[in-house]
Length: 386
Image 1: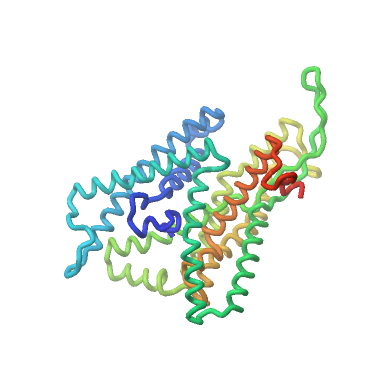
Image 2: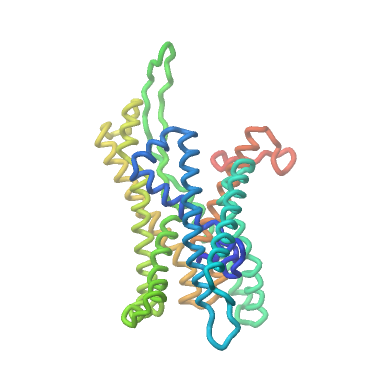
């Protein structure tokens, strides 16, 4: 799972072995702390300057996580030495740990800087683009694995065709849910501001079906990794027996816990990022009214009820997509894991989400600059117009 975010760099223990994952973890932690810590919440409301300060805190948090993870990875590499074989680490003294911390932390800091440069001078979120390319980097290996299975007659052409149809259908479903919103109609009255009369009318408040994105899958996967790590560290027979019984050999229990955690974190993250009381107050401040619902508390309860329903649908779909690689590889045994990851899970959600955001930003740039688009004489239309 971790190696997927680094494009195979973790498996090969390269300079960029930690990849951009520490930055993602720091961003999620800061985003959660913004809701809890009043000082950070105040910074977020200060606009560009406040966001600049939050970004700076995220960088500091990234470096801190890099140092911790670098020490853990150095200990992991040193622990791979086995008696009677060529040692992985010839001299695991304190200087080896210092070199690992400096090397891995510098590699992640460089990737973070590259991502920020892409965001500043490019057409999209640089960090997301780096993750996107890291996942796409495994596609040649997946293609080669499928070709080898076909040559060895473990997969027939009909089975490959069925798999292609399935992955197209899954991608289409992910696109629908990722872009899906519940449009709540809001009526605004005409108001006099100064000497000018503002035009009222009906607008729509878009409530996303998948408000949390891929964060619930990341949280759930991280928690389910802890028992295995603790089993290696503690080395207690009872704990190892529980881990083997419920987390390694029993896929039904593991997958059930995985799905339950995804659903829980979907509601948890949505509750943190979506504030119906604040939305209701802002609507009341500007005179906005949801037809058939009283302003104030009743509006907040209505928005909370609607968001709970669509979050339930989104979380169930998210859990189903996350379990698809487990189903294809763990139960059906139809395809190898390097191919199964493209049938669902975090990788597919990131690929679809980043691709949609990139296309949307390209369309925005083309519209702003009146370019003809990729094909001369034709303009790329937005999905709303098409």
